[in-house]
Length: 301
Image (tube, rainbow, N blue to C red; front, side, top):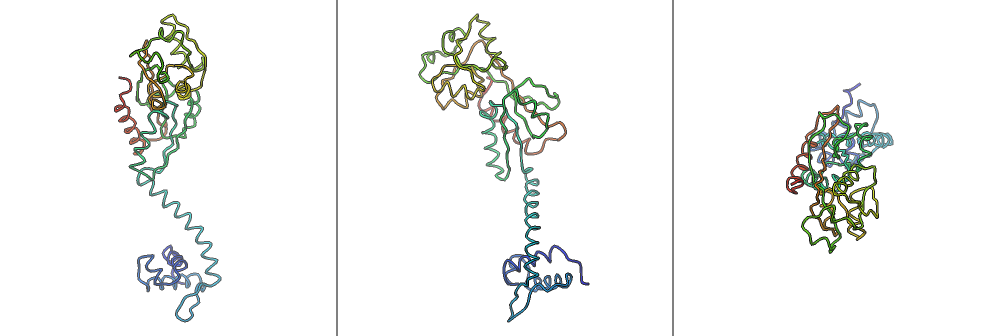
């Protein structure tokens, strides 16, 4: 029995099957033609199988060679996948799984992810957008790299990073009569058709409290599940509303007027990290880009 079969022999065999001649196979592998011939001979000696018949100076694959090649291709597909995966780990980790509530998904993460994609085009993202009330169940799975979420939330403080405090703003359709005012109050909105979130949401409770401080009952004509939907409704002329400035800014170009709202409303957002894993280079970088965008946008000022 000859020397043990090795990966280099199989690579030479595969290259020869694909290229057709030892000269071309050598070029593919970056070696000399005699090296390819020797590797093929060693493989035949080790297996005890004639893989090529030699006629008129040319090599012709045998039936056994065709069978080996088909089996080998399945193995090399797996190796190629592993190679791609390892390259991803070496560069930035390959994949990022992100959970985000609506304001973060609409107003901040598109900018941070886009910037990171330009820098690291091979990095894959999974962005799962959820309502605030659904975040807790996803956090329990720990199947994420970062979570950008409304605060407060029940999560260990050691794994909760301060991120952003944003103000509430009043949003109006373009050309609305109240757009002439630089600041809007709960009193200004007393008789105006108002779009609100459901009563059980923290946002609704926050807005209701602001109206109660002014002894005003808002004229709620539409209820919607998220700030993003509310922005769409306001832009379409269905009424006015109060949302956080992060969400409002993401929809400003769709036909919204934004005005500061009093009494002042504050919305806090945090970044959560998994309990059992250290932050990777790519998560650190995405956090950095998200923070830089927040600073540039001037939220909370």
